[in-house]
Image (tube, rainbow, N blue to C red):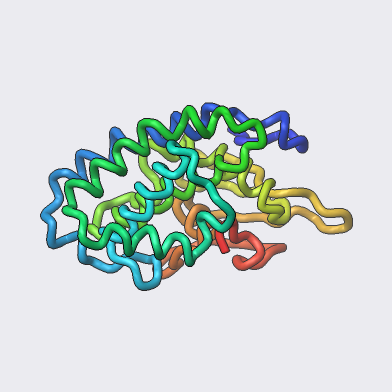
Length: 228
């Protein structure tokens, strides 16, 4: 399977893909969150300075901003994200989880209605943050799992929009599935990646690569970052 075989971004965007990813992730993540002891939410995540509770507060806040059309200038920048998290410091955990569940349910149709596709990357970021929390909780397949088939094509679209260089990847843990990401650049051959899918996600999302094994040629990890 090739998640993106066209060069025109407009030809490959599926406006309802973010909604399907968010709803699928809701059904997978929320039961885990509801049964996890509250003390686990103070565990640190791969996001510098943020606990699992703070990551989830950020996720819910970002989605509800989309739902309520509160997208003023500077929204989603680090300073605004920090303010949203601080605003929720005194909330009971249940309220944070309720807001997140509402966002995962209601944000997708709003994202689909944006013809420019600029909010698609938020849905992908929510899925990555769910992986951050799973990893903090010691869950297996933190950046993989059943939602991966939806996340990979969204990564393909996002990597083009964020103007990363062209990369052809072979996913060894998925029957050697081939993915094509990023944009071709004149005079520069496509970079190549060989490794497992979760490691590819870690590279593009800027997550720790400790204990991973992969081959990357023709590009650096920094060039492939979609969230900076």
